Length: 278
Image (cartoon, rainbow, N blue to C red; front, side, top):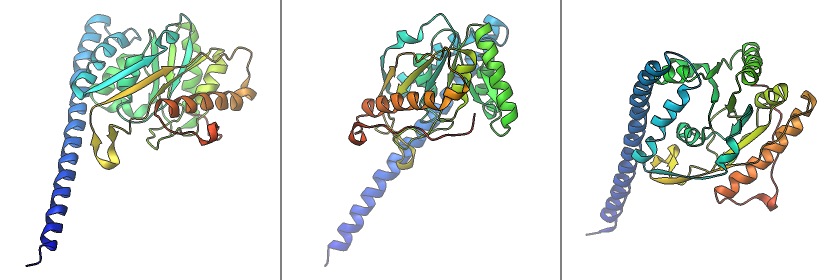
């Protein structure tokens, strides 16, 4: 009796079982993460309301306390470098790369005092998660209406100087897991120049070694975080936005590839393409 068909079928069955097991683990861990977000947001919202009675940047301390515990449940570890560069006593724009839904944990790992984010308006309607980020003082923009987005950004520029806020923005504008940085949008750079405040880049290494939705991978892993030196904008005008974008993109891309252990093309880095304002 020919055994090869049976052996081949058995091997294929084993591979299928392994893949199903991996997929099951992936969805189980995603479900756990979502549950942590809902429960953590609910508990944090209650504490925020009891402590500060409403919406204020001071609530970010409470939110951070809850979120940084998620890593222990999910088996993740952060290696940080240069966090002291974020602990400045003046307003600034913080920019970082944006990879996945897990970025919230990385953000909270590095979040300095009096720092808020700019987020898409749709997040406001995510139940307890929307409530807690509203209480944290996050600025919401409607990316579908550019005029409204520009109005919000102008208001942010005034508020960050008046209230001594740091503003955290993802200049890529969307999540990106392609192993490189996307071209930057202009909003963060207009904001920094408008307010004449420095830009501080924060880079997170690639998640691909432990988190890859396309292949249903979600295991334990280590994320490297590095804060670069502040890039001043004093004296710059709107005409300097493209050069400022290019400077930031090159510095961040070089660091991202190094932290992620990825080769660079002949040691060079690619600059960003021009994109519409956020």
